Length: 150
Image: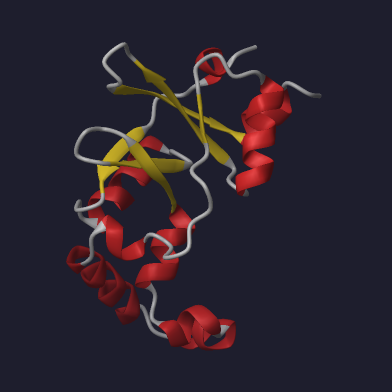
């Protein structure tokens, strides 16, 4: 089984897109992550839902689960409003691991090794054509890879 066979279509956004757009894409598509691309389409980061939550929740709520349990629903609206003011670049972790990217020909073990090395539960499957233009084929999750080892 190769990466191209397991790749699931995924969303791609540029870093200057709205966080709210990323939230909508994750929710509507049920995706595990979004691949963040440069203007030329080169993947440079994987954005997961927990990155968005970490970047948009007030620090006091994020760091104290007891406080989070007593805040009112009004805070939900404030978080959503805050999302409209942020870009994808604003919520990407400042210190990111190496990008989890594989070729369409990568095997299950190659994908597993990339996930283990980068700590990412998702790899981006990218094909580079003859002119070095990237074509994002999709993503493969750790759950998909693990399913093939059972």
